[in-house]
Length: 164
Image (tube, rainbow, N blue to C red):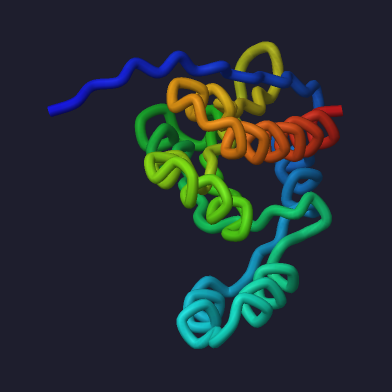
């Protein structure tokens, strides 16, 4: 067994906007492909160019797409009822960006797509992201780190705009 310590850098933006508005602002910048069709398209793509075209059609203005949505608030609301806070975990990414990292650092597949957490708290809506560069730093692979930093910049800009 091998063990590796990873120190994670967490970015948090806090918005005073209502939860739904923050979510709508974020959602408007990422793609929302039909995942069944998207997966089928990946399987049937015969060339790198076909794959790239498929991904470019699926991503939104932030060059990211939503893979999955986990409504944590749905579970939280069972105890105190509808007034419980909202909490949502979004898995977002771009398969072409993921590919560039995983080619160089296979373990990057454990972190991509990335998690964005939107969580309603007393001081506002928290938008939280653990940076990909911090996950990949222990591997010391400069090209993968460059790709990870570019991804982090995209996500940071996305969250800043949604929170503003």
